[in-house]
Length: 91
Length: 207
Ligand SMILES: [Zn+2]
Image (cartoon, rainbow over all chains, first blue to last red; front, side):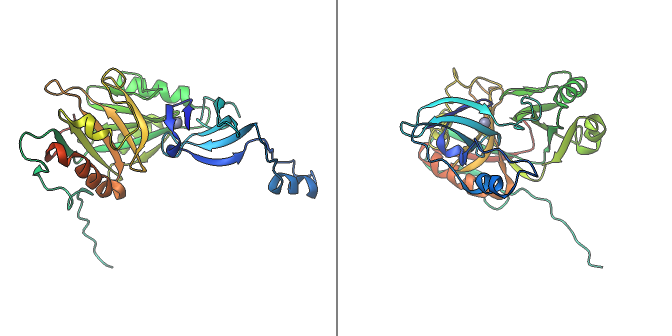
């Protein structure tokens, strides 16, 4: 598997580290215990296309949001995660 | 109070033995460690990338690289190291921290790396063949031209790689590696290059 880093270009898997599901969003401070429990512990186990966080630690050290099919490993999109690169991304 | 006498020396001081290594005959690979350089990493503060680029251009006369490239100025090399960040590689204190801090005070965070990295310059007819064992980057001259750079890994070790100006008609590839990993990568390079014959040296000259 290779990932096309938006900053570095196409690189081998060994340069990247997998973090996991990119979908969960930190709940508001007053969202309640159930919402926090969901955010911290509960994950979908998707057989198909999912959004994932990957870290290009063996390269530019940017966090990436990768859209990947977990059945075929086909990658349909790679974009910088929010905050990766001080200026290139909003947030 | 105890007196400390810091013995400043290269992280490859013990590992590097100047002279021939490996197969006999004409050396296919030349490995030269460059010593005593000034290296500072510049990273844009949040929302300040444009300001950082502006002051860098004013100071160096050329734009700092915004894509994986290395740019030569009259007395420095600017090497891309990630989004909104780059290295300043120079000699003799001309672009040392003391001088850079006022320049980037409002736009960038600086990190002194002069003694945190080792710099290895690789050339020779078999340089690319040897590096193909260590790197997944396509170093064919057509794919990796003079001035191309990459933040990548060799032997699971993060490196900054760039192609300098050709010397004697041959490509020169430069590798910046963390000082504490330098000896390990050096031995890996020697193993990879041994079959081609190696000429080992160290130098004070930036290429
Ligand atoms: Zn990258």
